[in-house]
Length: 126
Image (cartoon, rainbow, N blue to C red; front, side, top):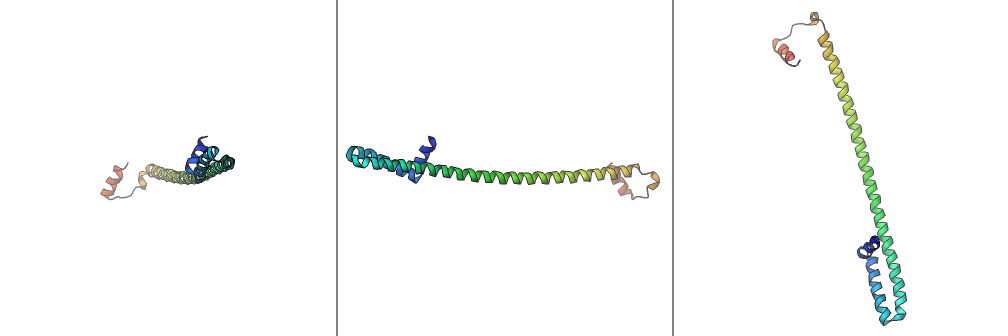
């Protein structure tokens, strides 16, 4: 019922239907022969207004659906990108851990002379 009321207020055929209904009400009192045709015109215009309103709402729903699909696709791409970034970070961390463990488990005989500043810097990061 609210849709019909909105259709009568917000569409051109709805406004014309209201005017036709008013004209039909006046015709009942002043020109009874004209009342029936005006009532039929008002009814037809009410129908046109309602169908126009439904058509507009369907178009809005289609636009909303397309926007939601685009947003979902964007979110899917972002999630895939984050998963790739996370996997790459995990591979780098694993490689770094393996390198550190290899360096830490190497025998002292593999050590060579190191500049004092480099040795101090490496010791700070342990």
